[in-house]
Length: 234
Image (cartoon, rainbow, N blue to C red):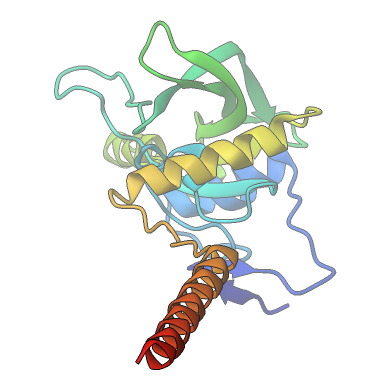
């Protein structure tokens, strides 16, 4: 199955949908990405998720979107992950969920985050949701020398670099129109200088022309009357 590329993203042909299970996301995509294995399909792009507000991420606004993203440290010292964007921040909610295989092997975790507008801790909650998947364990049978300390350290390092992000807009009655209006306004402000269309009042110009013609005609009539009066006088 071939895919089309649109705006830097691979777009599936009509009739196809990318609807992977959580197990497939962790075991078939994230694990392969972290350890440079061949991916089942090149359908998930790489980007820094915090470089974009959720409505500015590549793809359609109403569609569910998937991205590989490298963890970005918030500070030079410590393990805190950067969750801030230009307009707000992602805030974790609830407990992390274990992702297990059919053999009951726990290989990943899913963290749920909600996007908030503004600065913490007083941000306003939105309907943008992100499921962030991370690896926590790699079965030894995936690597021939995984039991060696050096190899295990390498695997742990690679495993912790990448996450897979599933971003979507929670379906409510009015959020689509509200977010679409907000996104348009936000994009226009980001341009720095907005090109506003110049509107012409053609009816006003027509009235002005009509008034000008009427005025010119009146002056002409006055001139003719004056001339006639002068000729009769002399």
